[in-house]
Image 1 (spheres, protein in one colour):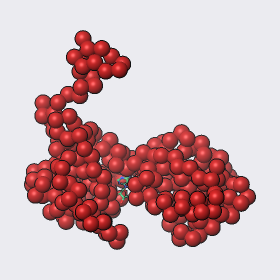
Image 2 (tube, helix red, strand yellow; image 1 turned 45 degrees about the vertical axis):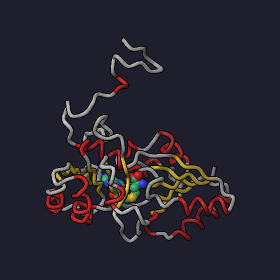
Image 3 (cartoon, rainbow, N blue to C red; image 1 turned 180 degrees about the horizontal axis):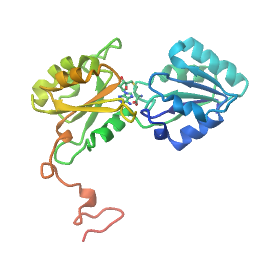
Image 4 (cartoon, rainbow, N blue to C red; image 1 turned 60 degrees about the vertical axis):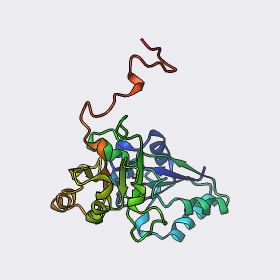
Length: 253
Ligand code: SAH
């Protein structure tokens, strides 16, 4: 394999997968996304490996590295923040590899969506409350296709995780107010799993002000929905561990 697209996880170096770390340790070239991948991971890289920060490179520069190294049968580890499948900008790189017959593979990672839920200390799919999680964003420099505006994607009222949106938290709260209500719980998690991780809790009504007070304008996830604050008794205990429920691995008592 020449090019490995590796999910580096949300930030904490020990949240990369064992597979991702093993490839990183053996790579001839490492290209990492500077702002959201911990430089601590670079300590595992071979001392003779070439290391590039992708924030200084455009697509053509990155793909020409792939091409020249692949010709020499080198191993390239391309580190992407979180899991590369969401907002990872990997598809154009994969298509380049396909076009140039460069072998490639994806190694999944822990998305910041799930690191944020962990920081908030909540399950996002509570039986009787919601069984749906939508991952999305507000339109920014990258527009969202028609029918994917916040009102539409939140119409089911379940759990929402919004990336790339915290700089416009007031607009987000306004867009969600009608469906969720002014008191709906919202949790903003800044740099989940990094030492400076911050969790700001509020409601549709209060969150914009609290986020402004905390000085958060980027690198955060907005979690929304009743699952964030349902107390015991407001949701149904899972059937999976219910003693009267049989499944493939256990019979009902
Ligand atoms: N592929 C990444 C997302 C990349 S888009 C993933 O799976 O996590 C970049 C956006 O991800 C940021 O604007 C922010 O919304 C979110 N993000 C990335 N790392 C984060 C972290 N540690 N804590 C909170 N949000 C994070």
